[in-house]
Image 1 (cartoon, rainbow, N blue to C red):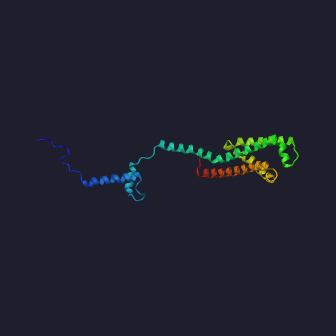
Image 2: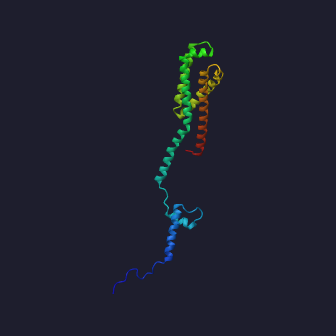
Image 3: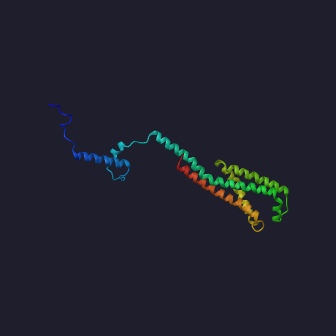
Length: 207
């Protein structure tokens, strides 16, 4: 007489119960994968599936926060780049204007039909070079941009206005003054847009 097997007296698994268990596994897997439409799954099934879902670890939250913090300065740099470029262009235009006044002052005066004053041309040229250089340097840092706006925009607009009467008299002068005026307008617009956007984002994302 041979000893009985441990489970030979137990009843076989009910096929209906096996099918139900497999169906439950499939439903839980569907909830976990997100393929079930929200609100269509049974609340008990959702709770059961939630027991199998692992929440993000502390290191995951830290990594996400670090990536977000790194992305903010990058977005800020791109936001202010147009204003910085406009300030650099305005500074360059003013420097070139000053150099031309110093080396070609007599030609400019003759073209405008005005008496030439070499001393005034040289002093004015040096002033333009100094102001243009200051604006160009201010364009390299976002925190210095207000200096470029305060100094460069009024001067550029005045130069642009003065160039209007030179359109039919001295074309090169009209172009030089018009370039300064246009650069000043672009600087004012781009700076205003970036400033307003930064204030709005600052209210939405307090740090």
